View 1 (spheres, rainbow, N blue to C red):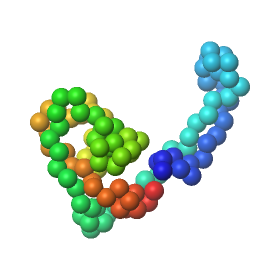
View 2 (view 1 turned 135 degrees about the vertical axis):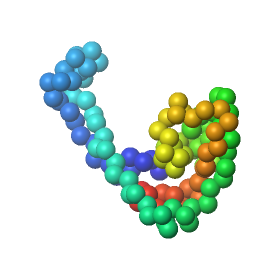
View 3 (view 1 turned 90 degrees about the horizontal axis):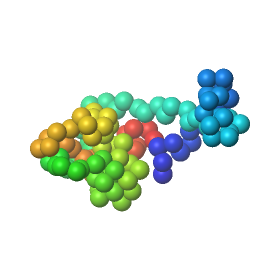
Length: 111
């Protein structure tokens, strides 16, 4: 299940993207509507069980998502949970938390 499941996809034919359409020989560019995630309450978030993980050289969110959830597309859950949008925001030796129950996390987020 993708975070874009149920998201509106629209064709963007604005003049701004003309260079892209010409370069790629496209009539329009497809865009996904920005998904709206719930901001869980503290009690809801406290019900999520998380594993502690020490960030090391070469670690990536998508590799951890594959290890914990069996699917690398859920990398964004680990990033969201730790309020770290990219791996560049983490240093070697930093302690991050990885929520364990994927279904529960998706439920709390309203996805």
